Every structure is written in C-alpha cells, then in structure tokens.
Length: 424
Image (cartoon, rainbow, N blue to C red):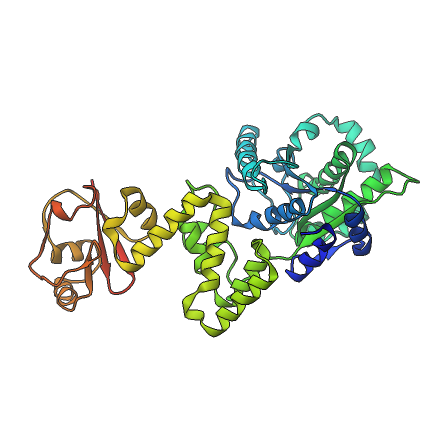
C-alpha cells in the first residue's frame, strides 16, 4: 500500500470516526514517515478482542511505512480512565498492574509485528515516566495548562458529573495528555489514535503540547475509530462464556475461530473491512457471496481464518479448522484428547466414575434425555451418536471401549447438541 493511499483506505473501510485537521494529516503522511501511538491500560492479564481494532490500526500505519508505538498504561492503569464508564473503576494493587502490564507487553510485541520481525515497532510503558513525576512539579507544570471549565466540557468527564467522579479519575486526562507530550518530545510522535470515547483525552493532549511550545508551528494530530456495534444489538466481543481473550489459555484458538465464524451476515463485511488486511476487491467478492449464497458462509470462514492466523498463527488455525470439521462431520475419533477438550470446552459436561453403564441410564444421569422412556425413544429414533457414530441399540452398555483416551465419551443428541462425559 502506498503511503498516500492510507487515509483513503481507512475511510473506505469505515475506520475513521473523527480526525483533527484531516487535510493537514493527509499532507503530513504523504511527506513524512510519522510516529504514532495508541494506549492500552492493563486492566487484565490479557488483551481481549476489543483491543484488536486499535492493534490492526497500528499495523495498517506500519504497513504503510510509519512507526507505531503501543503504549502500555502501567501508570495510568493504576488511576482508571473514566471514558465510556458510568461508575468508578476498581483500583488494582501496584504489583497486579505491573503483572498485567508485563503480560500485555509480550502479547503486543507479537501482535503488532506485521513484518514478523518487529521492525519499526516499539512497546513502551508510561509507568517509566509517570512514576518519576513530583506532585508539586506536575501540578505546576501540567495542571496549570488545564482549566476546570475546559475539563468539565469534555464528554468523558461531563457524562460522570451527575453520578460523581473522583479526583483520581478526573486527573486521568492530564496524565494521558502528558503521555502524548512525552512521546512527542522523545519519539517525535505526532499522532495519537484511539476509540471514539478517547476524543476528549486526545484533543486535550494536543492542546497541552501546543501550550508547552508557544510560538512554534506544532503539527500534532488525533484520530479516533468508530465504536464497534453488532446488527443484533448485542455487545461485540462478548459470548455466553464471557469475553473473547487473545490469550489461548483463556480463549482457545478453536473458540476464537468459532467466534468469528459465527458472525452475523449483516456484520461480516464490516468486520472484514475493520479487522483484516484483505484488499477491497476481495472483500467485494465476499460480499457478493453473502448475498448470493449465504448458507456457504464463505465470508465468515475467511474472516475466521484471517483473524485466527493473525492472533494465534498458522498451526493454531489448522487445529481450529480440524476440530470444526471433525465436530461438523461427526469424526470425533480423529481428534486428539487436547482437541476434544478444546473443542467441547463449553458444552454440557457430566463427570462420572470409570464403570460400565447402560446407555439409557447414562443419558438420563447426564441430563441428555429427561427420562428413561425419552432416552429409549431418542436411541431408537436414531437421535443419539456415541463418539460420532449413531447408536440405535436401547440395550447398549457404555464400556471402556467407548472411553476415548480413557478420559472422554462424546455424545451428540440430534444434529448439533453435544455433551461431554468426562471420567474421573
């Protein structure tokens, strides 16, 4: 992608919500290699799917030849950003925040290295400078440039006035502004990007930099991305099991793959534009496929493949596809023990001792069928599959031979409803 095409590409993908001095930024991008940053506060020990939009934005700038900085908020994470919240955040202990920050740094270094080598990529932590600030100097040198009226006018603060906001969170804007100033001085960072809720903090930082350089022609910019909404009204990035994490120990690559594969037809093209690096022609072809043959889920499959490969790598993608295909076809015996555990992590699970048991009794004990009568009916009607194979024998006894890896028996009732029998 040529540098001059970057803003046009972002616009076409729907990735620009607001931008300060768009013409000025466009000219700056055409004439210079710039440094930009986005902040990520460590509120957990893993990034989640909601972080992927700013991460891919940094990657897009990197792909266009610019230098992204991922700023881990080891300092601001101990304060709490009021943006987008109606209540105060719970404050974590310093050692907890440090642990979270270290975990996020490792993830970020891997995710943002578009070229696979990490060239042109920096991950910094604002604890390095915020922890060195003297409170008196900070109030004199930073606080002096912000009026209370100016801060109250910002949406992130104004939205909290009615319910109350602590001085701690009220001061967050000053800290984020100082971050932008610090990176401007040390890295010649001229652009801050963030979610739409960060507009007030970003523009405050720009104003602070200008005030710290009176009389100079300071060129700094801000750009925000849109809030991600889903067509069905549910929150993006949430499932029945909770948040979708980027840590494979918290959300397996198979679950991650399935999250994207299950994208609504009404959202899939938007998400392909937002999150993937597929070109516009290919996305247009996938859009046609959604319209003409939605049942094939070609666009969803491509989205799931691109995102799983980006976050977890090629091998994890192959495993996720293998599990998906085995569960769809019923070829359960082809899966390893790890793949069974991963693929059936969230299905109803029944723990029992290793002992022979009539299939009818097992179906009732595991709440797969509500009664023995219904269990016999389900079996005779061909609705019960044992480790992928239909079983219509109402006298059948489940034995050691039906225990995969001596750990599991997989039962399917009907076309899609899976149950996992786990042996102690």
